[in-house]
Each structure stands twice: as structure tokens, then as C-alpha cells.
Length: 338
Ligand code: BMA
Image 1 (tube, rainbow, N blue to C red):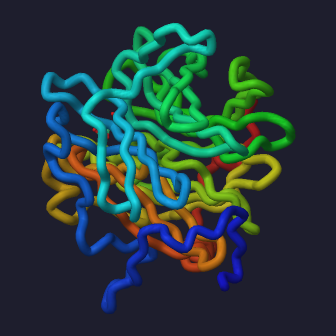
Image 2: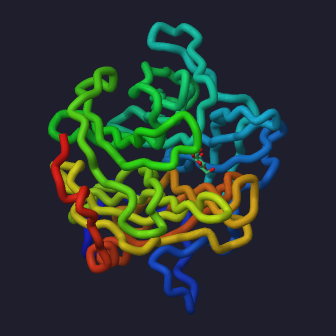
Image 3: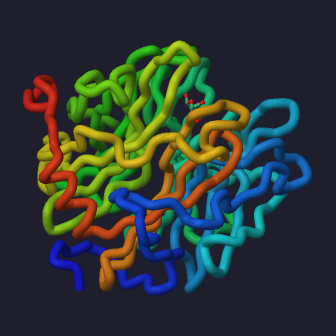
């Protein structure tokens, strides 16, 4: 039994592999990474930054697929073990709440989570520039797209798995229309997933080199007895372009715009060939996590080099204690900015 409690379901069948002997990382990679192939479906050139949840005893995923002409699509997949995936070749079809056709243009980087009995998908959508799109489903057969949650330009939107203080909580990252050489994490709140306000700043980039250029939220935050555990990506600009690593933070349970701790060092950085070589080299981009309340095991799904999906593992006691003991907050993180 972990000492730090995860508030969530017991999911004994999430993907898991013990930390290999000789491995000292707080987060360790699955030995058979990557878990998706380069041309996994007929029309996909690459499948990577993707969302996953437990569903009816197995798992469902909403996958980012870049087509061979370049446009990204969202594909649905199913898996019994969370590792071997059967992914549709046809994109998800969306309707609005009245049943009218309502397809997103250029959807990518989906996050998938459940609030009560409804599953939500947040993605980056084209709204005359990147913005946060939101949709929902209760059966993974019909998908309802809601109004976009933000104006352009914004990326890396993810909801919390429950309301806090009666409001839905959406992490997001104001951006630009291109490759964005800046970016901090903000929080927006809503009573109904339609009207968003009470915007708060959560965390800034810039404090350590690996997260100097920009940061962005990863998977849905995990509720623990120590606060919300959030994996997030951090980017540094180098002579050869951006390098995407990931770290983690603990946010206050009742006031999630307040950062309690965040890792000074990255937890995972591109080192393996499938992370350093691909369509966009040097990218580790976490988009999903599965967690088992009973054992404290956490499986993290991350995009590798914009080409594959990889899996990494950690345990709640290990990672939360590490974050607390190796934390460095920036000046801005400690200020309440409205
Ligand atoms: C970001 C997003 C991600 C991608 C990353 C690295 O701006 O577009 O989908 O993984 O760049 O290319």
C-alpha cells in the first residue's frame, strides 16, 4: 500500500513493469518501447501524442494521427492491456449538441479523461490558429463536440478529473500561431464547460534550462493526498532546435493555480533512439496517465519524436516524495497574478 494516497479507482490491469535493476530514474521506460508502429494504420504516417483511459475492463485511446498529406486527425483505439492497440483508420466523427455535423479542423494532441460518467477529450484545434477544442462521449460510439474553450492562440488544454470549488478546471497554455518561443501554464474555470473565466497563472517557464523556453500541461492531473500531481513538458531551444523533456509538479488541491512543488530536474529527456530520431527529433511529450489507487502504480503515455507512442512508469510515493525533495519554484510561481 502506498503511503501517499491516490484518489481514484483500483485498476490492477494497467500496463506495468518493475523498475529494471541498475535503473536509477524516478520514471523508467517500458522495455519494449515504442508501443505503436510507424505506419500503424493505412492512412497514418505517424501516431504519437495520445490520450488513454480505462474503459469497461480494458482501455480506450484517442490517438493523434498525422496523415500522409500532413493533416492531423483523431483516431479511436481499443486495447485489452493498454499496450497492444487496435486503432481505427477513419477519424472520429463529431456532431454538435443538436446532432449536426461539427468536425474540427486539424485536431491534435488529445487528452482524455472522465468526470463522473462522461468522458471528455481536449485537443488543440484550428480556430484561425491553435485553440483548445473540447468534446465528450459516454459510449465511444457517438462523440459530441462543444464550443471551443479558448480563443486562439492556445495549446495544451487539459481538464481536471473533477470540479474544484464547483467549477470545471482547464489548464491551458497561451501561445502564438507558429512554433511559439514562449509559454507558461494558466488555469481557466467554468461552471458549464461553455463560459470560461477566473483565469489564473499557474507556472512559468524559464527557471531551469530544460524548461527555459516554454512549458505545457501533460495528462489530466492525478488527485493525491499531497495535492494534484501534474506531469508537464518543458522545452529548451538549442542549436539543433527545441528539445522536449518532462517533469512534474504538485498543485494545491483546493486552489490548483497554486504550485506547491515542481521538479528542478527533468524526469525524462530524449535519450533513446525512438525519442531522439523521428519526424521531429528530441521530443518526449506526455499526454496520458493511468493510475492504480491500490498499488500507487502510474503508467505514463508519451509521444516520442512526433512519431511513436511510448510508455513509462513510476509509483506515487517515489515520484511525489522526489518532487517534494527536489523542488524549485520560480519567482512568478509564488505570486498570485490576476
Ligand atoms: C508542439 C506540438 C506537439 C509536438 C511538439 C514537438 O508544438 O505541436 O504536437 O509534439 O510541438 O514537435
